[in-house]
Image (tube, rainbow, N blue to C red; front, side):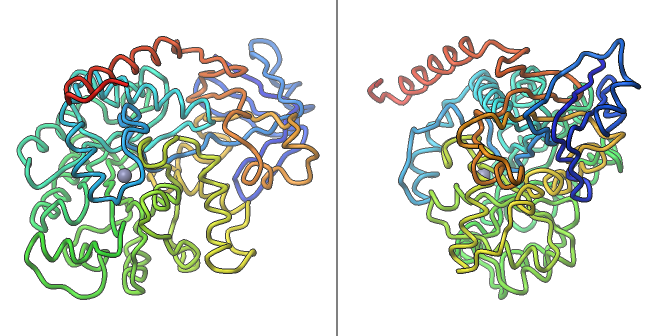
Length: 451
Ligand SMILES: [Zn+2]
């Protein structure tokens, strides 16, 4: 399908270029032209479906660099608990009862929520199961994503099979919408030898199924809480100084295709190493606040030149997939804690949610900005709302005032997946019904009273 989006304000995220009265021409899945409406109208007339963006802004689709998409099934199941107790006493026991179909349906719900909030790419870490899984859910929803299989020391054989199957069946599949990743859960749940092995596995999978243009990356939680070093020492009976990232570097596993999530408890040495190895970061401020993990030193990392992107984390540690909430929280929390209103300006935060997100996933050759040759992943947001009026700065509105529900139309890989807030690919009511049923099944398996 060919599209001409016209009369809008285009926030390209390419060298801070903004085009008023702008237009974007899309052929199949690719952006072929970006410019003034009056010029593009002449060039792309017949055969192009028109989308009128008057009074609206067009941005590159938002990129959520940390999710556990299937966990929407557990949204609101356990709140207000410390991380370890939350994981060990609540989340892991109920997750044991989740079937592959539950994983699929949970990820489908997250895909819907993401699209409806203007997010076009999601980086997700979960358990891979062959027939029904997060990759299939994203492909069915036409959502772009990096799908990982989470690895733990206690199930090495199982992980090996899952990673091979995931990469073989899904890497660079579904018209290039789906890529995959190798996901060691965390430095305290993956022993040092296994951590090294998983890097070798990633290299082998890249040789078989990946390419320079479409690499298989590594996605890992790291330095989430200040006691993480102690947890590593205890778990593996080892001694080390410096920080968690310095520890990972001593194993030789850090590189430019690794995205480290949280990075709350970092030492100066950690940050120097991250910069040197070109490690990418996913900042998840709402999850970190909700679990009382602390606040990541994002302004310091940015100052050092480290790529920092934004993520929501799972629907039970946040509890939404709303990237607008994340942008606003990111912009204000670092001002507050640094007592400095000039840090994290709106434009920079918008970059973190788009082009920096693409870099964090090693996918900036195709997504993250509105440029000729890139994939057409676009979100159109209406500014004709009382809370977005008047308009001085679009970036300011997007970060400080807009809501996920202001997103009207979403295009992924050149396909309209939501038009005027109606999904074109999925029946929302049906998915929500199935999710409620799955929740009731899970609760009955746990022998808990069904609410
Ligand atoms: Zn997480």
